Image 1 (cartoon, rainbow, N blue to C red):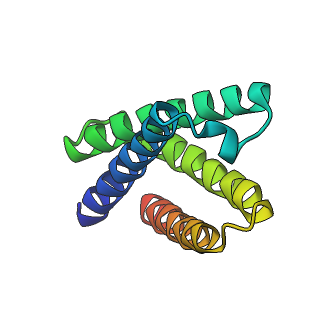
Image 2: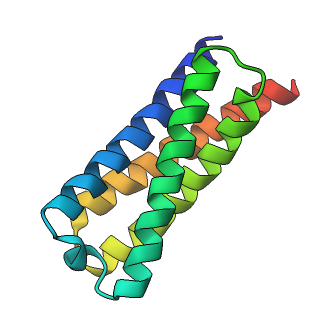
Length: 123
């Protein structure tokens, strides 16, 4: 039960933070500083919005103990993990060292939560 709360809060937080980040970046029209190629940028932002929405929905479902929340949680965690690893590559290339450190720590936390959640599910 406690792990479900931690997982739920984690994915909701990751989804909300990502949504807020991209909304601010788009409002300020700074997206070209993050990803130069317009076509690549469009699909990257769409993918992150989809990840955010799935993460928020799965976290809410998990907190309300919905049976479909757990499978959706693992989908959300996979999407978050992919987004984090992708972001490390994008921003590491641009030499955003502090952001890369934060992303690496977030990746490690995500992997640990996935491993613990899977272990508890199996055993």
